[in-house]
Image (cartoon, rainbow, N blue to C red):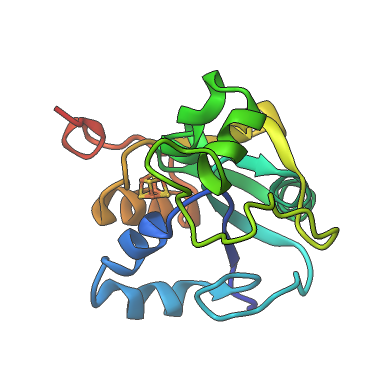
Length: 184
Ligand code: SF4
């Protein structure tokens, strides 16, 4: 019988949530027995090969490419999970949400009091048409598509990810114990 498929992606995230998934240590062998990975940076498959059972999303949407990828995940994945605070509420990238986009660009590329944040001798703000357009603010995934589950944390602990995946893969309710979802 075909194994369930899992896909993962990182939108406006730092890959810390993916690192946490790999932190399940030797249980990764069990996971590989339970599922096949489809589109994911873990196996470097770039495009969906077909419908997928579970999609794990790291990061929120800061640009048009993030929206395209997230919409594609929603289209392909039966269950879609926001993994981590960036996917759930925008996280650290969303700190720019109260600052006009123009000021963010200027701070990064030209007019910062401390000098540009990146090496940019021409002071030109990047405008290559290949670059995905930034959105006016960083959007939580749930404001762009329907999300079925949220796993909070920065990142969610490996045990939280493992327990949630095992519950879903064995058709059990995702009822995580308090210790796995408290962050005080
Ligand atoms: S929630 Fe934390 S670990 Fe996950 S992508 Fe955001 S900053 Fe990185």
